[in-house]
Image (cartoon, rainbow, N blue to C red):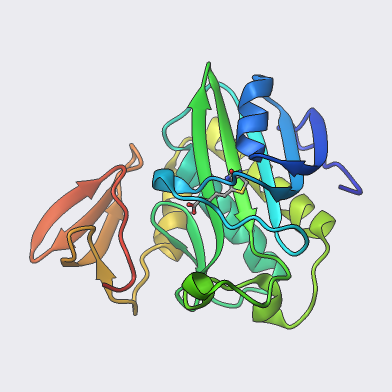
Amino acid sequence: MKNPPCQGIIEEIVELDVVDSTNTYALDAGRPGLLVTALSQSLGRGRRGRTWFSPAGENLYMTVTLAPPEDRYPIIAGVAVREALAELLDSVGVAVKWPNDIVITGKKVCGILCETRGGITAVGIGVNVNQTSWPEDLAHRAISLMQTSHRRFSFDEVTDTVIVHLSRWLERFFHQGFGSVRDEFLRYGLLEGYELYTEEGERCTIKDLDMEGRLVIDVSGSARSLRYETISLSW
Ligand code: BTN
């Protein structure tokens, strides 16, 4: 990072070339206020035990550590990173897909993995920055900032913008509670216009986000509330 933003959440920055996973590194370090970035990951992790495509060169892998843990960090991080990417892209339709994928035209531009160990939460953020070619299995569901805007982005610019927005939303949450995070999620996370499906393949629509951070969906006229289950944009 060129200008470490002293936004209150970052006290120390570790910039690595290669690491197994920035989340593992950050959790092993075991202290809050750490920003870990890497140019590539050998064991990048996604949610639900998936691997995260982490080649060197075009994408950003970063982790911020926070304490104490909080169940709603994944949602706060989602709205914050969405706002950051929307700013970088001059607001081209950037949405949050529950709980915290950032999507553009239904394709994923960023994934977030929050993991907690020993009183520390690692907020791991993978942003597809300048990637333009994808492995076959990702080609139809991944997109990068560059593919959206037809310009290259520096990692410093993306990292700084993400940290600024993440700090702002955490500050808002700590001082004012979850209300404004919920409002922001409902503004950018309803995914109206997309066909949505539950993990079981049922059509659903998003109705609300409750103050505990659970998603309320409608499935055939019945309300259901989700904490860990995902929804998908097609089945
Ligand atoms: C997902 O959408 O499944 C979450 C992906 C999270 C990827 C990031 S990259 C930086 C950090 N380190 C990891 O191993 N994973 C997260």
